[in-house]
Image 1 (cartoon, helix red, strand yellow):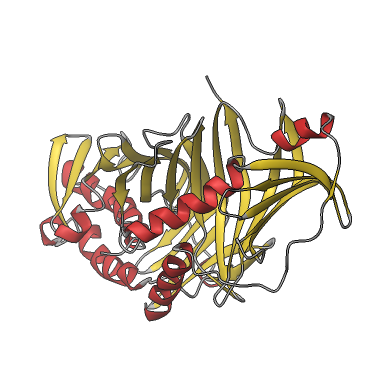
Image 2 (spheres, chains in turn yellow, green):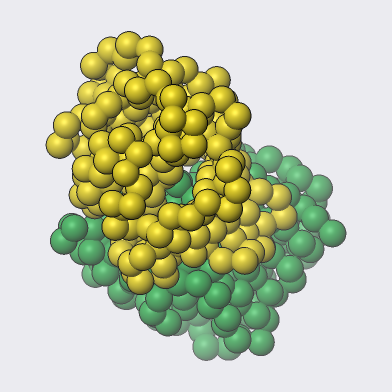
Length: 197
Length: 222
């Protein structure tokens, strides 16, 4: 399992939200698109204070995504259909990062339609369990992935279709916590959002 | 994928110390007496407990790797280092102790070889820790003040002050050929330390590489 699988895992987490709410409430609105801002806090034992990143994401069913870090390291991941590109900032310009392996993202996106239908038992990447009605735990099935991530905890929001946060645990002293805000559900999104940096 | 592995492999090889010979030779130093500039050289190397985070961009010739975030914690001669992806995944996390012991807490392949750890700490110590050896102050061409450290083995490190409002460090092998340069830019004074907003480390040789470090945070802590 390669380090660049993490963006795929983050995407996976985001899309878990709607199906779970469907499973819980049986009345979720079909997810067409979702947009949100996120705050990412990296916690590591040696860190004096968490490393905070901010950004935005936009997803449109079935396979379009824009995942953008605004600070401290600007980067943009674009996915539309079977095309995936990542851009990173270099000398003040966003340039394509051609050295990164992104095919794991395709695998994840291929499963999203299942999740959107609430079919989590079909997920071959994670064992899914409910801690309580608002907390979902994902445990990696694959040993390679388990070497990178020990578990993922999802906090579901009270409002159906929304996710309050995702925490990705690497080990007891190392985890990444993401919280989401300014969420917009099912608003039409221009194609250029997924194709242009 | 092959391209990524190529970059990483070259990075590992380079960090293991493949630099063998740029053509820059050690310039002459006109010795001067000790004075207040000695304190200026000390300001290049942060003392006490510090934690820095940088964006690190790796380049081999004109080709770049994927930027990562580097965490460097200084506690005297003890150094903790972590490399983290922009998405938050820890690639490498290790402690380098003053007695030479290394404790690698996490290393994701291909960062799990001992050569990588040793190469990494070599670059980090070059940036953050004062060189050892006999020190002479003076002037070198174009630079008004410099501290030259000569080790028992004959290798030399020049710390150059007041270069474009910041500092530079140039390392020379025992045959007096430059093998590493570190250029600081946009220095800001924090306490008694001069902290650059941007650092560029270059190694020279058959396969030289460049690390570009852009400061995210610099925290002095107790």
